[in-house]
Length: 229
Image 1: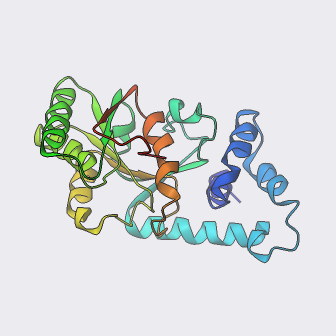
Image 2 (image 1 turned 45 degrees about the horizontal axis):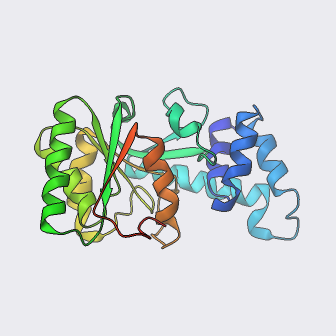
């Protein structure tokens, strides 16, 4: 099996195992060896056998091919070094759009889903100013500040990246499908979750580390004390 397929298989394991995966990948372990090792103590779980996980990985790759999603594995030259350096990096990034969007320096602009009109205006203006200086704007496609930041970047003919708490082909919230499509034309819609994964509450705090990993700096506009947690 190609190593890229085993990276995809690793991406389907529980998110709580990411730290162990990161340690193994940074130590230079082959993805097939790491997959075997992580599943060795689960002999009686039919969903967590090497064969079962590889089968689901093949299905995820096939769905990615059908929906125009590219798989960027840990071993790929395009995998962002800053994301690889976080404590619990994903073995794969699933990307819809332009792979080149990962290359320029980026700044994240994030904040409240219920941002005030002032906060939304600040996010939009800041994103436009950042893109005018050649920076990519990263955010989470959520309602409020996130979507304002994406729209500010696009309105200034800039590049923006949306990091989802669902599969890259499952846009949440649904009313942002057109926005996601517009982002993907010149930027990228990115997720560590396999195509077809539905949004769950626990995925959104997890995706924040990807947002920060892609970015040189993170600007938080009008967020509550527990926001992002």
